[in-house]
Image (cartoon, rainbow, N blue to C red; front, top):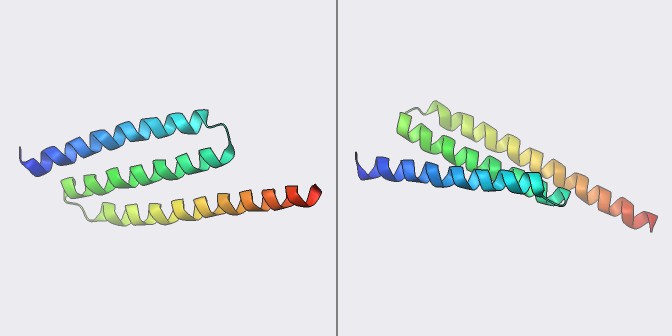
Length: 95
């Protein structure tokens, strides 16, 4: 086993642990912004694992899938952020 393969498998293991911790934060998050941020971090970790797997499997197609997923995750995060700003502004008007 080469050093590259070993380091790639170690990276996948570390990112998997990070995904588990992020999922715990998503479940236990006390507020909606905490959950939105944890969902964004989870998607970034998923994209990292997909990119590493793409290199290991020598398939460039997975990188296209990762790029598309990153765009969808970005739009989703921006949509949640817009919703939170609108909700905050509406609450300020009511006070």
